[in-house]
Image (cartoon, rainbow, N blue to C red):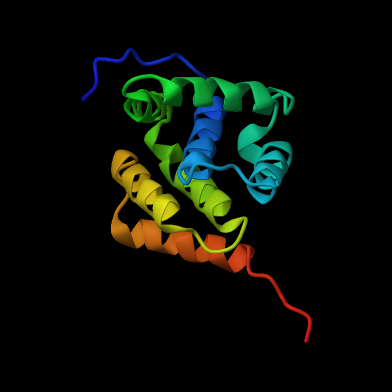
Length: 144
């Protein structure tokens, strides 16, 4: 493990970091992913009482950490130590939602989801169920 110090953050910020990790995995954060993050922060009970305006600042803080040497490790450790086990499924579900937001998850996003699954100590069966839920929520109906 990295010697990079863990940053003290709130659980909601750790959830945002989780979403940013997946969104940034392929080197770009799409408009669809950013819009999904905004909807999530504004509407999900996990973010109740959290100032939605902090989404941008938290995202930038995460991106800054990612640019450091061992950046992924620093962010992953921060998420891991911040989130109580009861929020592991929530974090993974949000990560899956971001991966699905702009269509099917690409190779880099799928790899990041696997790394997160391991860090959050979720079984493959738990992760698979959450992934299927995200795919169902983000399925688009095309006009005939």
